[in-house]
Structure formats: C-alpha cells, structure tokens
Length: 483
Image (cartoon, rainbow, N blue to C red):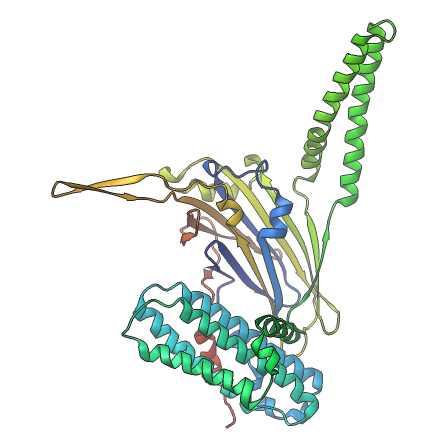
C-alpha cells in the first residue's frame, strides 16, 4: 500500500494524503523548488498569510476499503450496540461515502474524452445506487436511533444528486451517450422524489429556497462529521519571543540613535537650525531602518523553528488523538539537506535553473492508545493551493508561425513553468524515504504532475493517486450482506 497519495485536486491545487496508526511518530517534509523567473520569494509571498489562505488540511478517522459496518451483517444486531456506537458507525459510513463520491466527481469532471467520461459516469451511477440501497436496507426501527439515520439519509440523497448534476453540467457534448445521461438524470429525479415525497425530509419552503436548503445540508454535513473529523486546536508559536525581539531591536536602534544625538549636540553649539535638521534626519533614518532591522533579527532567530502547534481531539470524547508541529519558511541553499540537494542535482541539464525553495514540514505524534471502536487509523489530507504562485506568472504572449502551401498561420502559445517538489517521509527512527515530482503549470491550471526517478542510492517511498469510489466499494461488495 502506498504511504503517501498524491493527486491534483482542483485546477491549481495539489493534495497529499497519508494514514497513521496509534503510536506513530511521522515527519513529512515538502520542498517546493520555485524557479526564480516566477518571481516568488519572501519579498512577494508572506509565509504566514499563505499558510492560512493557501494550505487547507483535514484530519479524520480512517478505515481501509470504506469499512462500512452498516452494510455488514453484524451491524444489523442493533441490540448489541449502544446508541453512541451506532452513531459513530453511521457517521463513518456517511462521511466516507460523501468524501468518496466528491473525489470521484472531481476526477470525472477532468475527463475530456466523451467515451471515457460516460463510461465512468455509468459505473458511478451503479455504485451510488447500490450503496444507497444497502444503506437504506438497514434502517433502524427505534425512533431514537432513526433520527440519526434520517439526517444522514437526507444529506446523502441530496449530496449524490448535487454531485451528479454538477458532473452532467460539465459533461462533454455527445449524442452517442444519451442513455447514460438519461440514467444519471433518472437517478437524480428518483432521489429528489424520495426525499421530498416519500420521506418528506424537507419542508416546501426549504425546497424552494436555495439558501435554506444549502444551509440545512451544511448543518447535516457537520452532524455526520461528529466523531469522525478531528477537532483542531491551532496555536502560533514564538509569540513571546517575537515581542522580545521587537523590544530588543527597538532598544538597539535607540542606542545608536541616542549616541548620534549626543554626538550631534557636542558638534553643534546650542540649539541651532542645523542641529534641528540633523536630529530630524537621525529620527527619519530610525523610522526607515527600525522595521527592517527587527524583521531581519526575527528571521534569523526564527529560522528552523516550528511556526505553529496543533492538537487533534476526538469530537466525542475530547481525548487528545495526536499532536503536531508545523514549519513553513523560505530556505537558504546552505540549509537544504544534502540528500535533497543530491536529488535535485540528478535533473537533466536543461532543467537546472535557479530556484527559491519553500519548505513545509509537519511532525506528528499520535497518541499511543487505541482509537474509538471501528477505527484503526487517522488520515491526514493537505491541499496546497498554487493560486498565490500563479498570480505572479506571466501570461503567454508568444506566437508560433506555420507555413502550409504558401499560407502563413500563427497560434498563440501559453507560458509554462515547472515546479520541482521533493517529498521526504520519516517514520520514527527509521531512515527517511524520498520522492520527487514535477508539477508543470501555467497561469490558469496545472498541466500535469509526474513522479521522477531518484538516484539509485536514495530510498524512495511508494506513492500513488488517490483511490476512487468504485475501487473502494469493491471491498464492500465481497463482504457478506444480509438481504
């Protein structure tokens, strides 16, 4: 099994995901080699601002192969479980079902070939219909438990309909696959009828108001995340140290300013216009250099230190599940590890360009105690938005000219940039493992992501694209399910 899964999430974002078990201690580093010609550096991109706006993480409990207790025969013995256990298993199914179909929808919308698109859409409709039937087959009869089921059923029905409609809105135009399109539309109509007429989950006012139905489903999404998605407590580090550096910088600047004032008073006799102008110049230079001096001191002291700490808690028990430290900084070439530099030297000569290195590290220590029943691992998914990078890129202005039978034509070409990405994974005291990716992008999207070969003396770690809904459900289909 791959330790880290890498994939393109949106037009300009990359997602990394990996799993950790109780007691694991893992450090994950990412080195973004940004070509100098992109114009990205500490002077144009603030690390703290990018962390809060461009890096989005999600940590939750995870079970392999969807691990759906709701469609397992043992889950039907409801009298052997408590209400809390029922709700945990219910939320696990609903959350992973929603995430899986959302992932499939994103991958499907990126397909441009009509035959490939509609074949995948046909398979997706079959899987969605099959899982919804299995889910509803195990509806509890106890009113106290039924309310939790209805919340999840209402959301999954609406979310599946919305994802399918969104996929169809971006479908390639073709008249050869009208049957598949009608099949998806029929599934959407049947789910709408099931919610509004059969079960009457939503009032008429809610159905007719897009804002009300959207906000209600957002609330239901939060309810099914209860006990699955971990609560995050993020804390910035070095706040007191930064205040101390600010005070020290101000004191040192004032020491120099005071010495200059004393010298100026000794040089000029009495209070003259020349003395006043000299003092004004001294204070002016103080204001100019004070901020630069403080920032330089702070960068020097902060270099190599973690910027944030995070505590992950179970939303049901409030128990601490894991602790994390996060680094994000632009690195000097002399601070880059030798192995990472060796990997980058292995590139082709034409790809060796001057680069600015943005380093991201996250160190995780998982609590050494079992998780809640039904959970064996936690999954971390981190999305890196490249939109802040793309803002600095130039639009393609060049043209390529062609001649055919005496006629000259031209075609506009886009400007592309290649970002090299080195990933380093270290579990506990084991030897670190490496991977290198080439991200080709332009101003509007990521063109492709490819994994590059490493030097023979460097240990690689396995990485692959994230598995989709149909692959995961194959595990479920082989499990015994009561009719």
